[in-house]
Length: 139
Image 1 (tube, rainbow, N blue to C red):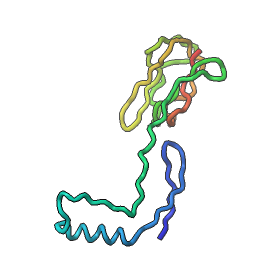
Image 2 (cartoon, rainbow, N blue to C red; image 1 turned 90 degrees about the horizontal axis):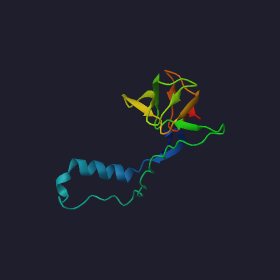
Image 3 (tube, rainbow, N blue to C red; image 1 turned 30 degrees about the vertical axis):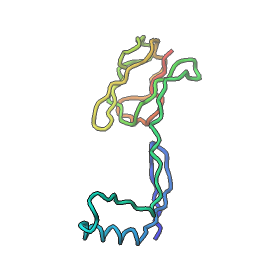
Image 4 (cartoon, rainbow, N blue to C red; image 1 turned 180 degrees about the vertical axis):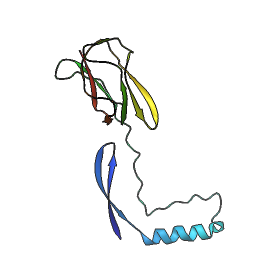
């Protein structure tokens, strides 16, 4: 029996088809009922299931020049903006905190990696943010 699922990973949506293999299910049930029939040192290997590649590493979030000539501070992970610590026109130095966001039930302080003047704040308190989303433009 084939089942279809829609899976969202890092903001990208994928359609996945999963096929239930009865012989594997029955084998696993049999092993669960009588595990003493296997030798302890013998590894359990299921050759009928293809090996999966390791997940790709998280994308590197960079602060890059914007089309307006400034640099863009991007979100390092998904979350919710708790507090914006800068305003448009404000001068900031490298290492200054620019906003606080909540991700994985923890508050995280995002700091600027460069000095300049805040030309645009693209988010406000309470906004949901995604990984790689533009947050603040610095000139």
